[in-house]
Amino acid sequence: MIEFKKQYIVEIWKNIKNKITASMVKFSDGQTFQQKYDNGELKGDQGNPGKDGSPGTPGKDGAKGADGVGITSIDVVQSTIDGGNNVVTVNLSNGTDKSFNVRNGSKGSSGTNGKDGTPGAKGEDGTSITSVQQTTTSSSDGGTNVIKVTLSDGSSSTFQVKNGSKGSAGANGTNRY
Figure (cartoon, helix red, strand yellow):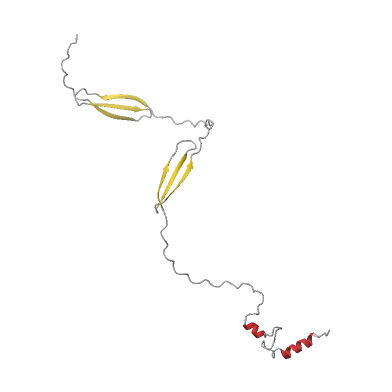
């Protein structure tokens, strides 16, 4: 085996590197390097993905879509028994409807009585009526009587009561015996 020193190889390369073209290098099938390159036959390993490009301009608005289907009404047929079915019907704007059942739950058991609450604080004394007096008396038809009510806090209030008119005499009674 022939050994070449690195410096000799470098010198040889310097002398031939600008003199050899891709058309001069032939492969075992007879084609040149340049022919295989032009035909796209020379491919290396796949490279790394490139960087993302800058965002494009926004596209035009799309065409108006068809009207959707909406709910026009909801009907419920209720059951009042434990475990009974409630039928819910959803009526749609396209003339169709969808129904489904909602089952009643069973009545739960009675809960236990809660503890008595703690007594509240004593409230303030209230105000009561200590006296009612008629301060003006009238016995005439349409006359005014004045009543004064006095409360335990010392305040008082008065109001008037009008006499009614004397009624007309009634018919004579008959003796039944």
